[in-house]
Image (cartoon, rainbow, N blue to C red):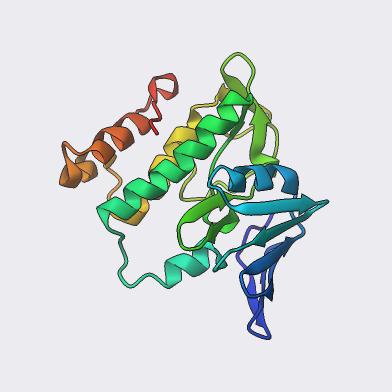
Length: 223
C-alpha cells in the first residue's frame, strides 16, 4: 500500500492527488473525481453550508473560491506553525464532522495528511472514506490496511500489528488532536502533556489534553 503524495499541475487548473483529481471547471466551481463515497463527502461539506453535490464518484463544489490538498495548503503557510485561533477553528471543523458521524453511527479510524482537502482555506474535509466504519457498542472494527508511519495515527493504531482490529471509536479523537498539536506546537515534542503547557488554561489546552489521554475510552471531544 503506497500513500505517497503525488501532485501534478496541468494548465494551472487540474491537480492530481493520489487517485483523486481536482479540476477547476469555471470561476468558483470545482469538480473532484475518483472519490469513494462522494455522497458522504457532499454531506460533510453541507455541514459547513457549502454548495456540494455528488454524482457517482464525483463531487461538485459551487460558489467556492479555492480547493486544495492539505499538503499544498501546509506548504503555502507563511509560518511553520499556525496561530491559536486558527488551530481552534480547525479543531471545531473536525469536531463538527466527528459528532455528525457519531450521530449517524459512523466514525473515521484516523486522519491522514494525504487524504484531506481544504476548501476556501477554512473547511477541512477528510476524504479517506475507506477508513469510515460503523460504530457498534462503542467500537469500530478496522479492516482496511493503513500506513503506520502516518504522523496523525493514534498510538494504539501504531502499536497494532493485525487486522481486523476492534477498538473504541474514540481512537479518532487523538488523531484530530495530533493534527492540531502538530500545526500549533509541533510533533517533534513527543511529550504531549508537557508540550501543551504553552497554551495552558486555554480552551484548546483542555480539549487536546483529554483527546490525547492514553486510555481511549476516557477521551473527549467538544464542539
